[in-house]
Length: 107
Image 1 (cartoon, helix red, strand yellow):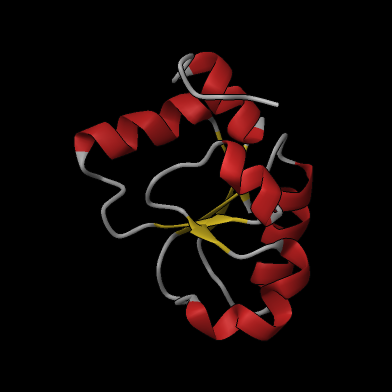
Image 2: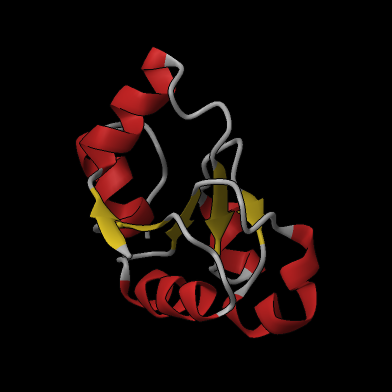
């Protein structure tokens, strides 16, 4: 698993390279209600084992959470499930709000 900075994700989104990526938000619904990336699919960490079929192991996958800790754990787990191209969003949605979108709500 690799680490992906918020700057690199932003550049990939703006440049069109992230079109085929699946972005998985592993936070809880109450966290997601505060702030979220529009194209991210919300699958809370605890629900991931039973909802794994919603994800495509052949697509590049970016996991995100609040600060990057839960998503790091999820990324390792996804690799063990056969996902070959997994990245953890370093700093999570907090880093995104701070460094990319200062108008985004944060908590």
